[in-house]
Image (cartoon, rainbow, N blue to C red):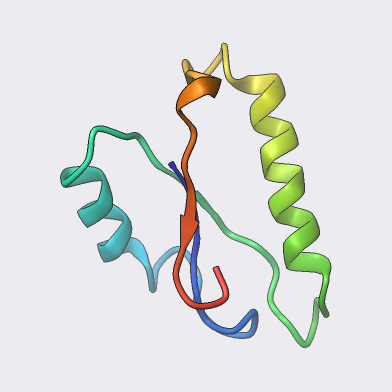
Length: 81
């Protein structure tokens, strides 16, 4: 599971969404990768979207090393995520 936190691209981070990520992992059969993307206004749109794409590209190269089945990927988030 790849999780993008909410916050309207302006607020939020791994710490603010730690509890929901833990709940998702504890209530599912998935491991979770939480993406800590850059926030606006310092990093204006579409920077966060580009970083999401970079995360997927990274996963397509690192999946064997981190033992991920590419046929079982879920991309999710809340709000802007």
